[in-house]
Length: 360
Image (spheres, rainbow, N blue to C red):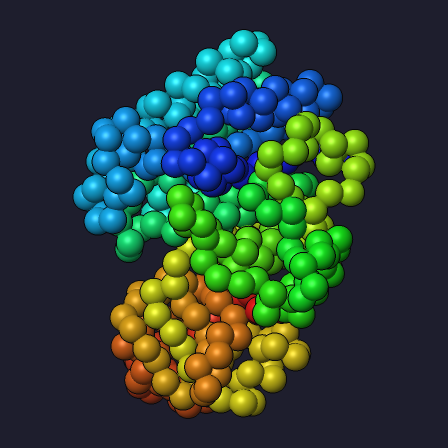
């Protein structure tokens, strides 16, 4: 497998072996594998969990439950975790660079591009970005949620070819408990995802499938495989078939539309009728005010919104040309009637197709 750039995600359960304590020998082995991959020409970005667990262990407390407890544990544990990575990479002549992100860093187009530029600068200087969510300051409103999703968003951000989700299982299992080697259509296997994450982690198979879907739309192959197999990353790069592979989608998004689809957080919703649904989804047209039946939430012109049918199913996401109160006033109106209500008609489209991503 020829891979120019790979994002590797390792979760808490893999880092601890299920013990609740960081396994330093495993981290050493993982870094050795990543360094070998880097030496063979693949740029590596590592998304790591484990800060909260490391901090809780150092403070002598159980698994934190409240947000302040998690934030405190992350503040203690992030430095401990990063110290292990810095030392392990340094022993192999590589610089490890700490990168802490929140949802707000991805929600803002400017901050999104700043993060992208910083990551590219690190890669160009042969550093290995070691990425985690900034759990010390993140609250629910600005959290990505868990690191499977964060890893997929990073893969989209840097246009990675490969996303590897290291897990405590061999891959996605079928009803008989056998690993499914390849999944071309994620929707057909969603029922196999099972329940939540492990006792020490937050991500289960559901989040891994969601991550694979994001990566596929962004042109990356995803592999879910057991993280404790020796040399797993280099084995994958050398073409060995391990775990479950999710190939890239035929409907790949360009860089800006990746941000619209997955980076930014919607501020509200536009509900459309069946005619508008056909126009958007089947014919690839822009959304006009005539097709709007309702507006939910408060948003400004230029904000990201969900576009839903009348049953509440999300059909698309896009950047609106009008604020919510203006769209509510002109919903159902034809273009030539909009100016009579608003005093002017700056845009014929409520959402232009160039600023819209349809769910596929």
